[in-house]
Image (tube, rainbow, N blue to C red; front, side, top):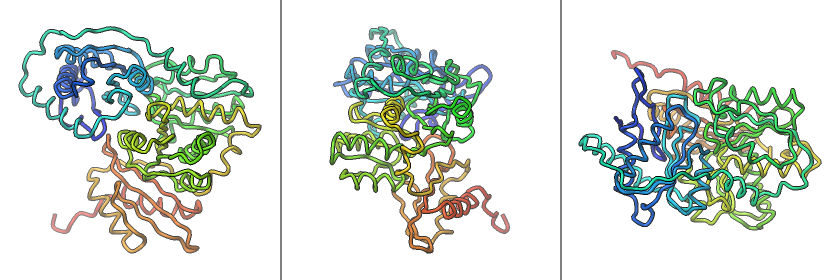
Length: 468
């Protein structure tokens, strides 16, 4: 079983049917997606695929079904088993094979999904995903037998190579001793962090490192402030120098300073961008359309160049490749590195921050002071039934208060009473029935006023027309 709703703009994501729980797809549907991928993949990279999965309860069965679909079409499979998403990107890049990762990232436990890449961890085109969706739904309707496997299946352990590659990119020798809190949220960072930190001079304070796809402690979504509280508390209690909070598949990482305060991803982007420009002056940095303007200021001051992408990993990766960019950062704490095949990796970003801190005599809060130039709301999510109508209601309310852009959702830009710029962006999620709001202004007061005005419009039900 597979429903059209699981096919998103950048990947596949949906509730997995299980027991008496209805869902949007199941193992049979995963097999059809595997067949559809094999039917449509470029012959140049169709022969062998590397497949990984995260720790979700449905992961082993549903990935096994997908692999059966591939093999029924004669595709050879290297099964890397439990892998963080960036570990799968490493496998694709280092082996020069197309890759498939089973994960629903930060979604609740009953979800699962698929992320795809071409050889070299390159993103697949949206048109290819649409074609896979159409083909899979056609195969589902036809209900033809799956067929016997003719492709080979082998197991591969990519963790040692992944760890070695990360350490080849960041020199962690000679750092001052640090105490680091790591909250894996029972997700895939619990699979990778011990191996990555082995040999680094840190005291590791681990929170929820055991893999558990039921997420018994908190949801694996660091964008929600309640999921950062445990790490913030642990940083303060242990007198830690740094806190790292990963999402479920460990391709995102949030940074917490020694005071237990969250450092916004835009500030982290500026910090790493400055470091990367130090080793390659004039390089290009990719940001997305809701990244803080501070990043462009910092990059320009250092002689670098900024290019702006639409939100979403497939868009950023494509632009990273087209511009030969050295680094990219998104507001959602996805960080992309040219030396990591242009792909996103939370763990490599964490190592960069750890190394910068370990070579500094300053605390983390002081290290980022120059990059905290504005007030930013962070990403605020609202569940909304009619996303398009709500966006139009907000646009109408702000007509005449600033310029309006429609490049990636709704962006409104204006000036405060002292002619200092502010902006907000309101866009629909690619994977969930949410509207995502980001606000930036020169002062906390202005940011809060705009934030509250927009949220009031978004979260207050639209008036019912008379006579309805």
